[in-house]
Image 1: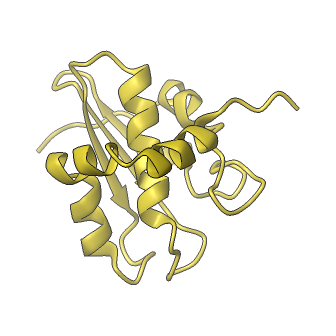
Image 2 (image 1 turned 90 degrees about the vertical axis):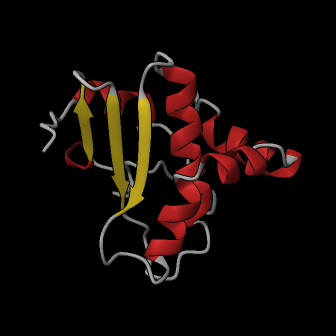
Length: 128
């Protein structure tokens, strides 16, 4: 069994991601928290477990892609990123988790210009 350590440093990479439907960050909505980030530096793995605001959140996959893209852009390439929906927090949890962690599905999604624009908008820094 892997030993995962929790880190505020990794939360700093993703805390300002904006929700695709609300004018708040994922941290403000408690979609992500420090406790939901697990790091295994020995194996270069990061796991982020997020909790959608509602069980039938239509944006769960977009939120997960935002998390994945932000970490891919922020972390050294040696890190394996694992994004998951919190157990019991989404009606299609297994399907969302499968989509978010399938390299081919993620690559296909990131070839869609309008989807990439939406992700980039969520990742844009807020200067309020």
